[in-house]
Amino acid sequence: MCGSTKGGLSIAGVDTSKEAVIQGRVLRDGEPVGNAYVRLLDPSGEFTAEVPTSATGHFRFFAHDGRWTLRTLAPGAKADRQVVATVGSVAEVDVELTAA
Image (tube, rainbow, N blue to C red; front, side, top):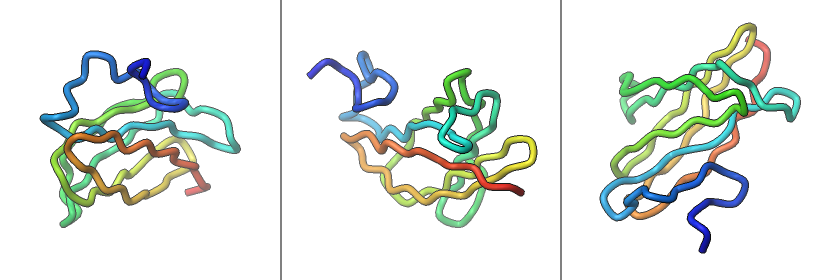
């Protein structure tokens, strides 16, 4: 194993035995969206964290086991996506934006 997930960010140096990783890309019409914001919401909908996407549309969160919502915001578009995180694994998520 080369330390990366298929098509995603490298996990080299990330100890997945201690936390779950939620990562992916934000896309619009199949193209990466840089400078969007991805929020991590807990099962009750409470805000937990927020990160901007990179120029290539990538984002990453570290979380604990459970169901989470990724709320992605960009000019003129938004998307909510459910994801299940499990310690010891990487949840790869592509988020396709739709018009707000």
